[in-house]
Amino acid sequence: MGHVRLEAVMSDRVHAATSTGWNRTWWGKTTTWTTYHDRAWRNVNPVSVNARNIEIKAGNNVETYASRLNASNNLKIEAGDQALYYAVKNETDHNDTTFKKSSWIGIRLNKSTEHNTTRISTPMVTNLYARNGNLTSWSGGDQLYQGTIANYYSRDIQAGVGEKARADARIILEGVKTSVFHQRTKESNYVVWQKQINQGSHTETLTLPSFTGTVNTPFKAPGGITVQIPEGDFRSQIATLSAQPGMAYLNELAARSDVNWQPVKLAHDKWDYKQEGLTPAGAALLSVAVAWATGGMGANLLGTTGATTSALTNAAFASLAAQASIRLINGY
Image 1 (cartoon, rainbow, N blue to C red):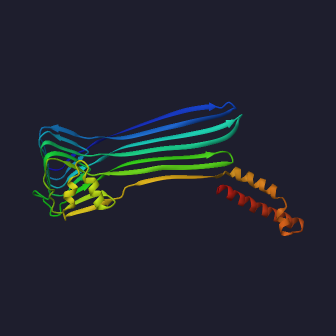
Image 2 (tube, rainbow, N blue to C red):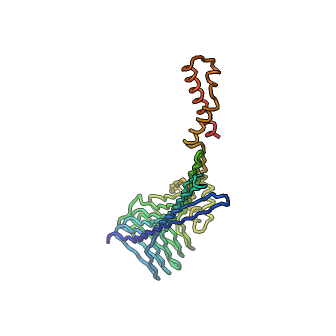
Image 3 (tube, rainbow, N blue to C red):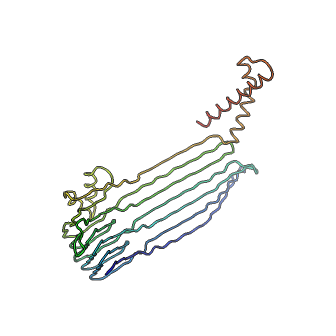
């Protein structure tokens, strides 16, 4: 026998829409806006098997992708090589872009562009259920559990057994990440003044495999066990995680000497950036105003004589004064 692979079907769906609106104040200011709404979804449709007893046997690998194996009695899986219980991600992507402008008696007052983005990634994991019986998972090579949910009366999980048994076979318990990303950006232009905003957050959480049962025989693997946990103080993480349903096995593993603990860095980011200042048109108007206001001040301060020299001195002084004014205003 070769491989047994229970693959999930991925379904993609997109939706696009446009909304518009406007309003007018009593004194004549008119504001119009158009928003483009874009939605995209990628959903997992896994294989589901329901029976009193389920038995899966392969000469090489057994691979499941978010599969639902639901046995009311016994569930037995034997892989000559590796048993790989993969997770697959559901993904959602929402984008809204709004263009807004205001005017008064035909004169433009301001315009803005705003983007709002939300991206959510949620894992769908393999479920191994032997509700009233024994969950057996044997493999010659490694066993990989990506956030797998196992529920049983008793369990027998062993790597490195059978005709193709490997002396370095491991049991690998990987966490799966849920990711939530939000971002809002906005650029506004008020003819002589402009403003930019960038706000958002990105949060990740890690969910470990869970094993819930009455009789919990220790995991057996000649190559040891590899476990992922969130980055942080080890004792605190074990105390917090092991108190959650299906996670008591972490206390057992913490007392073993053949466990390789791998910390996983998670995102906990939040930002709020704002910048504002003069537009090029505003800077040009200010330069003209400063030049007019300073007049012949440059030549007077330096005591310069001569028409050409005085003109150059005044122009240089006005330019420096304008640049200083622009920097002062933009740095406000």
